[in-house]
Length: 245
Image 1 (spheres, one colour):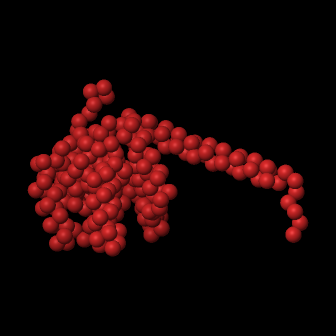
Image 2 (cartoon, one colour; image 1 turned 60 degrees about the horizontal axis):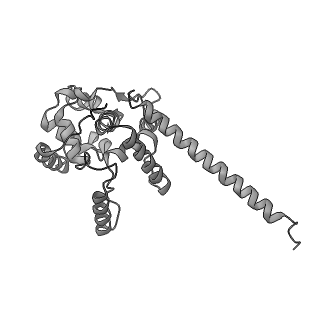
Image 3 (tube, rainbow, N blue to C red; image 1 turned 45 degrees about the vertical axis):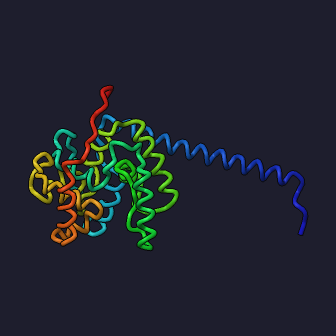
């Protein structure tokens, strides 16, 4: 085997350094892109999300004319019952944490260890929103790392009420159904502002697997989960807008 030409290690180091600099620049540009959208959406309602685009593509594989049901409504026009129900169902410590519920994450780890499989994630509303806005449902360390960075941006740029308002307007609630207004009309033929406490509890119970429960609306577990959420709703703490906003 012939010897490497003189200066070869230096060239390799130079190219490696350039590659690393390029990777860092690309990473920072991607983060700036996320940051810019989050800043824009602080005042402007998102018209679509990454999850919406993915679901629409899936639906159009079966029906090229398929469309999503989604209509933005302001926070004040969403039933207080639904707000309380979602807090109970998805993130009881939402108003207290900084985007990460470390106690919830530890509890999820222990539950998964006991079951021997993945059954709980411990994600907060902010983490779920980060994923819905920009990422895919696929689980990976890279996606979780990016989700964490977006979560920090959301918590830094938005107050808790804005995070919750956007979350309620963009999460999936059925097959092609996104947001509280579309969900209320899809399941109960009413607006998000008019949902009863039981209707709200049932919608909140569906959030972990909305497409499944859209097709199976009378399962025993869904009824049990609805009753459990309904009983806890009076104690739910809702976010309030910061005075400076």
